[in-house]
Image (cartoon, rainbow, N blue to C red):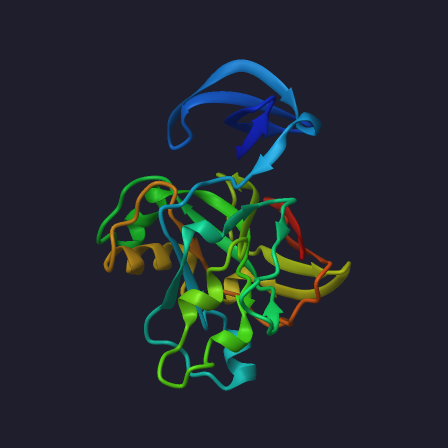
Length: 254
């Protein structure tokens, strides 16, 4: 199944995407959603973020190739930060240029895990039952903010401007990251192309480990980190994050 959220005729809803139509459901996407029988052409809807997360957890240094190139040590445990839920935006929406920051802004194409059941202190074996599915993400970053103040690394601010977390276009519930590849196209040119199984901590291990630090709730999102090819974007640049089996998340910066 591929789930999406949308606006149609002034009404917010969710449903299963099949070919060129949305099969509308009611209730909770995460708890036995019920089909209404309504079918809406995809061309007639406005995309919304596929989920409204209570928290967004992002990984740093989770890919071997990037660590090797940058001279980073293999992490002993997941290294993560939080992005504001208000940074989440939808497929097709512009990524605003921050008014309070005039430095470089980079794209980071990533796989995102969407939590479907409340979980705390989960084993890796139990983590799968708490994953609803996977979506594409762009972990947009204000590069110069990260270490501009030598006394305090500004991860939250650098990652949390409005629109700095595009998600979508859908949540794929039957997607298997093993063997899959993520590509990021910037202005139509491929800038990232990396295997998802190059992670130090695979998605289910991330779910397990993070759940030992904080309770994970339905709708929460874990960004699995990025690999080689991250570069700044110019305003007006289209960016696409592509994962076969999920789809293409497309936005324009500025």
